[in-house]
Each structure stands twice: as C-alpha cells, then as structure tokens.
Image: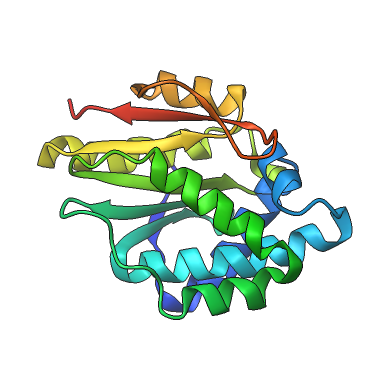
Length: 194
C-alpha cells in the first residue's frame, strides 16, 4: 500500500532536494548548468523557489519522502511570479541565471491558457525509480482532476518520461520544441479529464 501525503512549507527543502537529485542526470539540467560540480547545488536552490511557490499556488504530493509531485493550480490563469524571483534565481544559480530565465521563457511560450493543473515537477529518488511511485502520484491527483472535470498539462523531458505520461492518459499538445542554443527537446503533453 502506497501512502500519499500532502507536503507543506516545512517540507520545501527536502522536496527540492529530492527533485534535484532525480533531475541531475537529465539533458535539460546539463544544459542549464554545464559544470557538473555546480549542478546539484544550483538545481536544489532553484527548485526550492518553485516548490515553495507551489505551497501557495498549488500543492505537493509525496510518497515516503522519496517521490514528489509538484502541481500548480491554473484554473484561473497563471499564478503570479514568486516574490523577488529574479533576485532569488540569481542568488540560487549564480552565473547560470540567464539559462534558467531562458528555460522559464520557453516554458511560458508553450504553456496553454485553458484552465488546468500544471505538473511542474515529478521526481522520484534515484534509488526508488522504476517501482511505480511516479505513476501512483499521477493516479492520485488525476482522480481528483477527473472528479472536478479539470485537465492537466506537463512537459516531458525525455522519451522515457513521455512514455510514462502517455500511458497515464496524456496526449501530445502541439509539436515538441527545442530549448534555445541547441538545447534539448521538450514534449508538451495534455490530459483531458475522464
């Protein structure tokens, strides 16, 4: 039996660390932070900003402190940016801040305007990957979205994650796109409520 709990403000740092460890090997994070020794610290600090923001403008589901789903509620449009966002991103990522802002701009350019919940981050600690925790987190919130008649949106970062999301009922939303400066590909996906 998998127990899913709702994270709060006191869980932000831990959730951000789980996401950073899970995302560290992705091509998108290598594009963001091209020096491997800088990568984990910059990612953790940046994800802490996003996870904290979701506490107010969405929610975070967790399993056993090892799996995290960060949802932003966009039934009424895009939430406001985090307070002092540019300053905080610069403090978190240093010389890589321009890349993080370029990623934000690419995401904004491909984000749908229809009411939905946005899965900003889905991460499972490396030692627990492949055991169905990510799928369990998806099923959990999809059930609520289906009850409420709300759609979901996300952007897959790899072909493997894209396959996971397609199995969970997502479908391509437009064409895949490439991040700037010959960056890696992103796959926008949309799930209609059932």
